[in-house]
Amino acid sequence: MAALLGVLLAAFLAAAGGYALSLLHSFLWVPRRLERRFRGQGIRGPPRHLLSGNAADYRALHAAAQSTPLASFPHAVVDRVAPHYREWPKRYGRPFLFWLGPRPRLVVSDPEAMRAVLTDTGTFVKIGPGANNPLAKQLFSEGLVGLSGETWARHRRVIAPAFNMERVKGWVPEITAIISSMLDKWEVKDQARSEFEIDVNKEFHTLIADVISCVAFGSSYEEGKRVFQLQDEQQNLVLLALRSVYIPGFRFVPTKKNRRRHALNQEIRNSLRKLIEINGRKCEDSNNLLGMMLSASKNGSEFRMGIEEIIDECKTFYFAGKETTATLLTWATLLLALHQEWQSKARDEVLQVCGKHDHPKAENLSDLKIVNMVIKETLRLYPPAVLLNRTAIRDVKLGKLDVPAGTQIQLPVLDIHHDVSIWGPDADAFDPSRFAEGRSYHLGAYFPFGIGPTICVGQNLAMVEAKVALAMILQRFALVVSPSYVHAPMLMLTLQPQYGAQVLVHKI
Image (cartoon, rainbow, N blue to C red; front, side, top):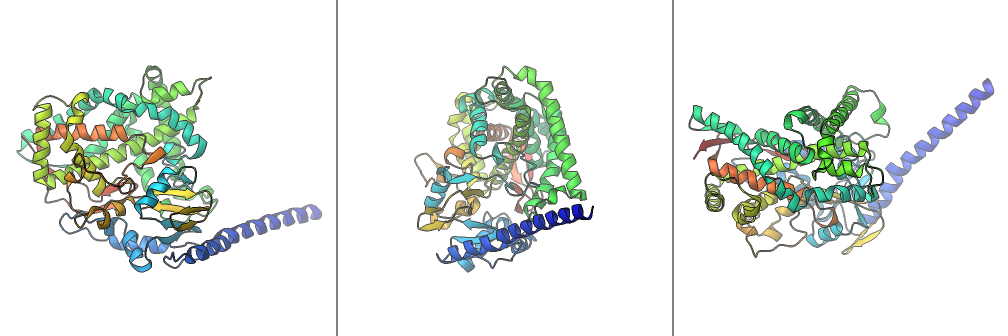
């Protein structure tokens, strides 16, 4: 017995010693080697702490920036939303380096470098939110947003055809019916008083949840309501995880938050499994997203997807599809409510193209050019995704930079979209005419949906939803920013108004 205990103890000590050496290699040797390599090129950043990197500095900057709202309603929002993109370059220059734990983030702001990173998918691989943190990955699970490599390519080949423009245009009647139902409820409020206040952020989240449920999964918002509620709670826990340095194995520690994370994940998956069972048969022969994934689940399919993979994609599109479009509509509505001259121009165009009472149709959406310009300028000033991440899988030259393998390249979308050297001295101003026909911009200077092979697969649906919704709202209502609105944009997983988006509405 004593001999056995001695063997077990020796094995434990050897394993513990190996783990300790692995941690020392990951947290000490590798970061120091990479840091020297970057410093030799003149690339600097805030001083790195041994275990946490710059996580505490990052949190402190954000906490200070978001402690007070912005005055009035300016669009110079980078300092509040992503203060490290302005504060650290002032001190250390561009590009700059910072660390979350032992992993370096190289922040690159040159448009040509951005284009190269986003289009060279063989060298710079996509990484989803919380790629190195299992607690942060739960929201997107193993769906398209969080996948990479061959698995990502297989899923994309199945999913992309569901969102080609012709198919999306075929959904316009369903989209207009759902939007019309929301606006009918607004008119009931209007009957009680000539002008009423509404939080359009809440309204649009419910609206887009209903649209996603209908056109992508053949269900309704009421059927998926529980999933959306659970994902809202899950988002808050994911944000906590993203702002912390993950310690390997911590997800298995039965803390209160970890137990809740596990319970949320299980309930969401079970709810989606039931929804798939309920709607699967009627969707199987349809061309919506669920139908195409179910077809790919059959034996013999070239790009076969199992039921767990389908659940993962449902999770992704229930959340990402809702958040991005609802956020876009929120900011676009606020901007039109603030800039009355553009609201009038857009309304005149809608009435000319669609009339006062007819819903927009697929064939006349391309005629809504001013509405399209408003949407594009909204995406420039308030992009739903504030940043994109890629990882260099091998040593590579990026312009004059020598980027070592394993470096995470961070592309600061919001900062680039507000860069005066690209957009001029009025970069923080709302001016949809920037996107008038015939005007162009560098491919790496404007990319609210990404660019290249990894461009957002749902871009067509998001743009059509936004265009149809804005057109129908402008047909029936006038908008003014409410005196109760507090301008405090902040980064959740998308760029959100911290205290809601209150707009005064009256029927026209």
